[in-house]
Amino acid sequence: SAIVQAYCEKTRTSAKLAEEARRSIAGGVTHDSRYLEPHGIYVERAAGSRKWDVDGNEYVDYSGGHGALLLGHNHPQVVEAVQRQLALGTHYGSSHELEIRWAELVRDMVPSAESVRFTSSGTEATLLALRLARAFTRRTKLVRFVGHFHGWHDHMAFGVGSRFDGSASPGVLAEVASNVRLAPAGDTRGTEQVLDRDDVAAVIIEPTGASWGQLPVLKEFLVELRRMTAEREIVLIFDEVITGFRCSPGGAQQVFGVTPDMTTLAKILAGGLPGGAVAGKQEIMELLDHRAAVDLGSEKISHHGTFNANPLSAAAGVEALRIVSETDACERASTYAQRLREALNEVCQEESVSWTVYGTFSGFHIYTNPEGQAVAREQLDAGSYDPMVLKARPRPKLLMKLRAGMLLHGVEIFVWPGGPTSCVHTDEDLALTVEI
Ligand code: PLP
Image (tube, rainbow, N blue to C red; front, side, top):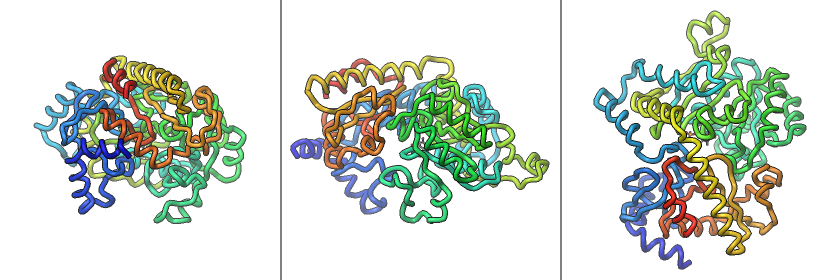
């Protein structure tokens, strides 16, 4: 199409690099959601709410470091903290004080966090949390919700993307998949039936809803889920990799007033550098403790990781969490997102387009309504619609055109399509996005 052609002309150096990448990087990209046809942009630098590609084009950024950059790119205080640490060493392979300060901040901010263990990513965090829950309960079955994303390890590599029926991704053992049950989020009775079918070790949920709130769940469901899991002594895990330090300084659990047994964290946690964490009840977390595990008569849970609590990530994380806890960063990002959602919906109305822009907190989702059905915004916000319909992503060609069209005029959206917002997006960013 003309849009894609114009985009290709504007991003010639990126096109060349994408061609080179294909020769040495599997599939040409290092994260599935960075894939764009005919090619994505290659970024040279970023600052605040903007980034610049290798062809010198400037973009308003709504990929937000996959959600890690609530404070925007290169927040000066975070950069300074990392530079200070850089001069002192990048990786000790020993304990260091900053990791304690980092864990203290998590404990202070996140209601369920009695104790913390750092990992290198969100995927590792959910993997460890699920292992801990199984060891603690001495049960095997895990329950997750259709469409909710918890990283890419074997236990969670289905029920999401195109695999809503729970069939395992190629390469995942059927035995692994068979130990994980899919439940319908938002449906208390349906979920209760799944919980009663087996001896369940853990339930894991994205507390604002599937895939970063694309299929929202309401507070009432979380309250019911807390009740149902407590009654059955099932470990309730809130996966706050995206919502943690974003919905509020204490995450979604603080906003909704529902405290899980365990929480998984990443993204904003490490201030834009790699890092993750599991936090939770002392009695569960102490299965990681060499001494306490022996006292409990159980074997210690194995957990390693070369770069866990890496000093650079810890330095960035400490600074970022301080800013989040001491300023109105979460609120500013949420207010911007709300204004953006409203302004984009006005455009859809003016142009008589049957799309809807929705979402909660500091995120927006563009529902391109592939079936052309009447779906009211209120329905989307309340999660009262057929998730299979909504989850039908825009047809690949439309999604490609939408993203390329936005890039062509200077805005990068995330693959949802939509994106997380930051506390440094400006009125000018908003006006430009709406215009485009
Ligand atoms: N859980 C949720 C809710 C996520 O959004 C993500 C990443 O997007 C993950 C887990 C996986 O985190 P990571 O990409 O750091 O492995």
